Length: 359
Image (cartoon, rainbow, N blue to C red):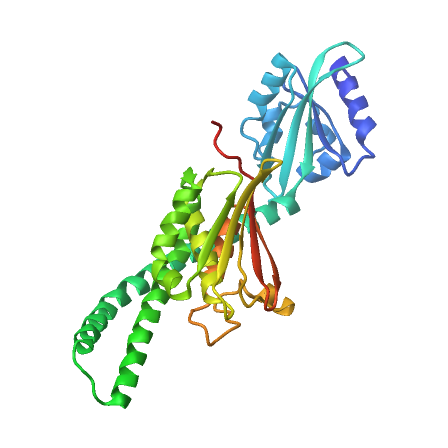
């Protein structure tokens, strides 16, 4: 046998007992000079394949760039890694590493195949699930948009008709009672449509980052809730350690609006007092909304963020407000916690890993 064949046989014999390891040994002429037993089994290699060009055996591996990659490793002496699928369907993490033969100082490359078939299978399954979830989410957004859009027109017609009827003096007390029920139901229906239509927007709105003036935002919310504030004689106080935050203004407004409105609605037999605080600690922006209302039983705190959960059916609402708050906080990778005592009030604490703008 020639010297090259002697060397390759030594290498092949040296790795023959390692069935788990799948390795090919290539010289600087891109000839196969050895292989492990694991590679022999996996790629159907025989001793007669020794000193054959790498191209001759690469067909069974589906590694189109294998020769070019070997030449690149020989020239640069840098390792190359990639993933490929063999003809038998298995997936491999492939590493091409420079090697110097100790007997004659000649360069070569060791190609090591690590079976990642199970991992790849799970990855493909996860990608498929994510794709399906995206499709489901897109269908949901389209459905919600269509429902909200299609309901608004007939609802507006009903509101217009009811508005005309309200101009007439109704003497019949029974008829007046039903008219009031219709008015209330129409208002509640519009509120419900408005809340539901906000759900698909949460993810996109959370990405719209801007500098938010917190005092200005609370002023805007107070103006929107002016009627409820006047009827309840509510007082909103502020204790702001930080006055500005880089965040989605729409998302932050939705959170504060719902928490302040809840503090007004779920009041005791005294005027509602709602205190809003902000602070920065260790780069964590936190704000809290505390009220002196009726409070939440401990056993019910975990349920309040579920959609349509209503603990007090006698108080106006549709149960979506806190669900939206939780969705918005989650979309921004934030946290929300609740501390509450019955007949003493509730405190909602929201935190985000954000910093205020540098002045």
